[in-house]
Length: 337
Image 1 (tube, rainbow, N blue to C red):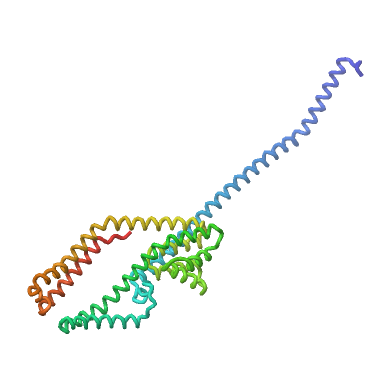
Image 2 (cartoon, rainbow, N blue to C red):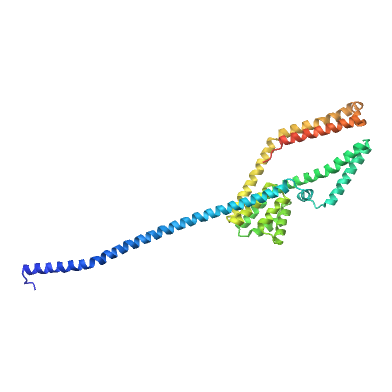
């Protein structure tokens, strides 16, 4: 075999190249088809990957838009409810005012007490020699005004005590949620361990739940018996979290910080306006003080105010004008935060 001539080797080489060329020519379509198939598969995979990422991005955008829409609808619904409740809270009836003052008093007993106060004031005026016709006006003023002023004072004092304790109660609820307890257990903890009047308000929430009411609705009802923005903020946070989800402990923690900031701002405003309040108190107290001093120095000079009809009329008109002045000064120095 190794004794072949160069011509034979050339013929064999040419035959091999020819056979290889024929085989390559025969295999070329298959190789090209395989190459095209791989290229198409890579394109399909890239298209699928791009479409999946785009689809995931679109889903995320739709989910975010849906969530924003749900939160907006919840806020609008809460705003409508708040407007409806504001009408009943800003100008509540007498029964609601008594409830907000924390008194367990029926309207019938309130009217009886008012009549007793009016009768006692008229009797006192008669003892001091005031004519009967003026005693009737004193009876109406004392019977209609003094009990309602007491109710208003107790109502404001109860709201003040509630605001002093409310942020601490929210912090307790936040710690309970972070430790793994549900919201209901945190509310029950406040209803049994907190100070008044926070304890009573949260006890009403628990009682409303026992009657079949949901937690957000029960919290929204707290604004009716405790008419302050802070109670409304708490109810709104619970309502939004129940409908849109989210980290409740973080939301309540932020609410507690906001309430403390509001309390600090109120204290700062009260301190800055204390000079104006002292000036207003001095100006309002000057006429009675001067009248008392004149009575001790010259009793005959001022006795005409208490012994004649003209004097009674002057006292009545002066009391009205003084009341208007005190009211105007109070509005000028009363700052809401």
